Image (cartoon, rainbow, N blue to C red; front, side, top):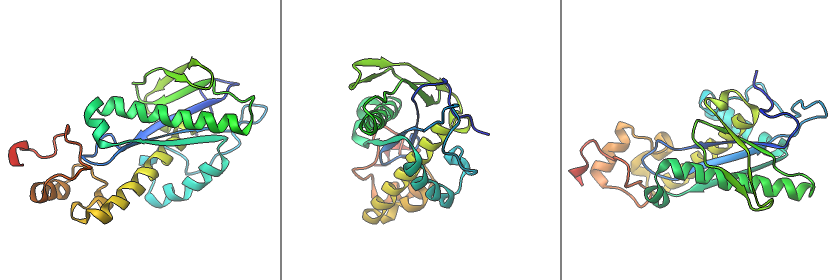
Length: 218
């Protein structure tokens, strides 16, 4: 059973990203702040709520609107391939998480001006300190390896990030159907790399990534 929070009795955002490994498209992150009752028990949970990678596409899509509806606040943000190439994928992933946290923090305050973000838990082991524009201070954070399979808020964030990115790649696949993004989501599958070798890269490909085993082919 997933845990409701890392730090008790505070407004805590869980954040995660999707799309660090693909060869094209943005990296997308989400942040989720869940409501708790007076005993700090989560007011939203679901039997399928876990790490998005453990769920089917259908399960993720069913959970997406429920998370949005029942979260106290949430945010979803993206960093495009061009920026990924400039600052590297790790920094881009963390930047996307910061952007999503900022959105969630703004939504939290809009719902109740007294509600302020007090703590952040992030999936993985790398995160940069987040400075709140609303509070004008750095918010404490904790990185948690496999946090998306441990904490409800991070699991919820992983689902929002994954479904958002899948929707983006499905839309881009309508423009570039030859790369098979609707199926492979731009991960380095054989069919994707075969298409890159045949048609060359698109404006959405990450040129700092190794697109082909032999990069001299184009």
